Amino acid sequence: MRTVCLALAVISAAAFAQRKTPAQARPWAETKVVKNERAAELARAGRELLDQHQPSRAIVPLTECASLDPSSYVCAMSLGVAYLQMRDRSTASYWLERGSRLKGH
Image 1: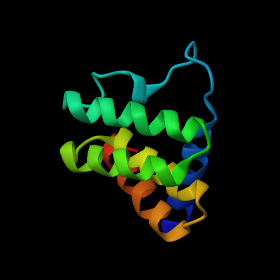
Image 2: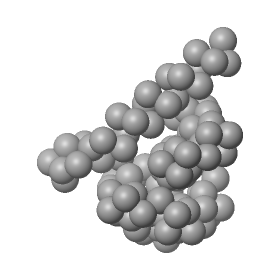
Image 3: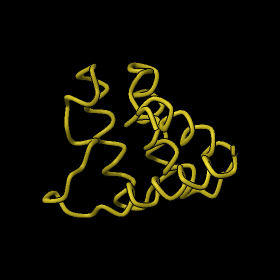
Image 4: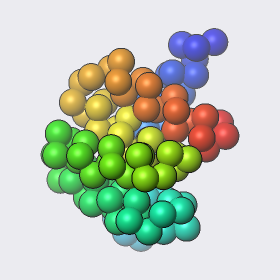
């Protein structure tokens, strides 16, 4: 069961990371999703770095985002995507599972 959940989280993260245009729904761009305004700014900054294929630089704002708003699935999923892009599977798994739990899936 855990393997299935992890596989679904990875697939969700991959789809989450593939969104390229502002016209598409981008949950990290909605400040309503992240409760703390500073955390929302950090989430946007981190996602922009991920869009530029700079996951190691994205870790810093995304980690701060997650500490400012621990209930945000956006921060957690974004961190999961960053670690996935860096090929750190165990850390990516932790953040993707956490994001999935926070979102309620």
